[in-house]
Image: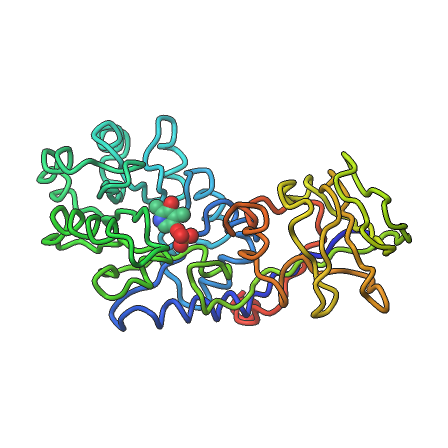
Length: 354
Ligand SMILES: *Cc1c(COP(=O)(O)O)cnc(C)c1O
């Protein structure tokens, strides 16, 4: 087997959902964000396990993702679409019974014209300036929208990964000014906001990354494990170069292992000469650049070279790897390629339910 193995631990996923659910008040519902194929881990496996755990509201970015998720989940759960009601989406929204989170007056008009009695929610902009109605726009539409009874009102925090950032309180204040007196379920918090405490939780929290084992959920269990096979090892003498551009030069006689994964598999090229892999608990540095399909790793300090080295999982987190690439765990997960042999462990509740 030369394909690397990507193992998704569905029991750890459930433990993380429970951990985030416990981090919010007893009256607060914990939903799940499964956009981008559940952050690259496979919505077809992740979403049913969460539904069996009791998740009743799911969030995706696009109507197309929502329609696919409806086929996966069946008729029960509510599926919200962050991008709202885009031109051409009416059939998908109606057919899959999706709830678009309307983002501006044009989307409101489009929705009310095409699907007058179909459920909708609202996304308000509390300061991030990315998606959602501005306060003045919402004020102008408010009576008409509330009369049609939205299912949910949300906004999104720009800086919730940093509890000390004053942007959090500014956005909370803005959201309360718009939605504080609404008799509609409200949601402001993703993973970071959930951990900011009760003021930010409202009726529904909607974590994504924390479910999948990423920061800022510090107590997250690792969900994704990536083990990459060693194809070949060779001795190199002091002064010899390794890899494209000959950027790594052996400072001592050592041994180089060549592994079967590269940037085509989502191992970000920026990690070259910086990241490390693990042989058991022993770190082994990348030696040289990341190639399309291959990595070269200095294993000269190992007594025996194992069949595979771990990039992330038990000994190193997705966020550690992200740091070595100058990026965030979200990008590492959503970049995971499709050449991996994917395995799922755990998730017994799913099988029992289906
Ligand atoms: C992606 C996203 C989330 C989930 O955020 P995490 O940081 O992954 O928990 C929640 N809400 C919106 C609007 C999003 O775009």
